[in-house]
Amino acid sequence: MRSTKLAVVSVLFVAAIAVAASAQTTVFVPGNATGYFGDRAEMIVPLVPAITLNVSGTITVTYVSGTVDLGGVITGPNGIFWNEGNGLGQFPLQEARGVGGGKVNNFGALFGVFVCQSRVQHKGFTAIDGTKDATRVGIMPGGLFFIGAGKTFDVKESGTLFLGINDAGHVGDNNGGFTVEVTGP
Image (cartoon, rainbow, N blue to C red; front, side, top):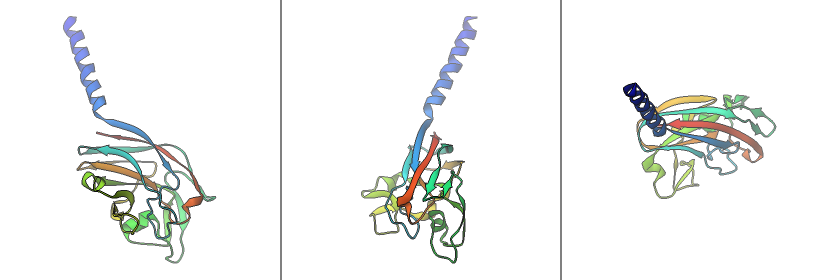
């Protein structure tokens, strides 16, 4: 009986260590946090740091609640369809692919970018578009990716996950935001 109790206590102790080894946080991403990405950004609102890892591993982002009001258009974390027309305008996720205008399937959606630790720790780093003259060291748009209601992905190095909203232009009238849960190793 004593050895059975000892085994159960040992299993619970190991399970507690495994739980303690993972990081979990709840993050609010305001509706105007676009990171100054896109071609018509009127306000410089940095992306939101969600989790910082000192090791490689798996990150999971899960939508919890909230909506974003994009100046009269309300959306959830997956965004909405928007026709930007004849090639005018570029949203952050379009900037990541080097395209602009036309049909946008994820206007107002939650997006992310994982930035390596050496870049985040570089003097002058700001969590905004590094291709504009607004910062000495910023985030390169090619790394932006769609998260929507949830995403699990692996990272191969230490760094920080930043989150934002896929909108460009008049973000000053955006309201609301998304609350998400982020877990990592």
